[in-house]
Length: 199
Image (cartoon, rainbow, N blue to C red):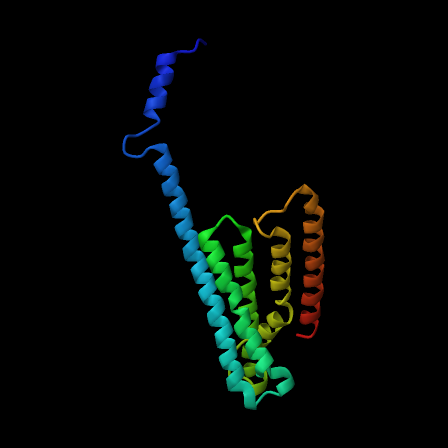
């Protein structure tokens, strides 16, 4: 078929609308995505901080009924919990401002799982040791606390691999990424099996 310049010009004209040029549509779409990313990052960061703080409150409540070796209510542990709250906060700042950078989301993941692990550990100690039977699902919470720590470590390992752009520096780094992913997957399976065995 022959090329018709008039039909081509009409099709180009009809593909644009006077009220919403292509540039504005793209900008609006990216603005919506950035807003959604900021909203999700804020919820995850707030949940992480709330879980960690709740775990600290439970540790304070349990301080007289749980042996000191298991409790974790001393200066180094409390200081560590406070410092670890920086993970979700930093992740929120990065993910909300640069949602395309994976580092912010990895930090948010590490912060959320760490907060859940801190809360799960203290919840289980209260349900199983401090006041047995007072709270449900104590064994499930301690089961998660016994293996969930692998996820934050794996996330932070990938942060080092992807720093600072959120992408591998080149294709040569792919074997390293696969090795890290495989190693932590093997560790996770081993720890999950161990936690399940002592359920």
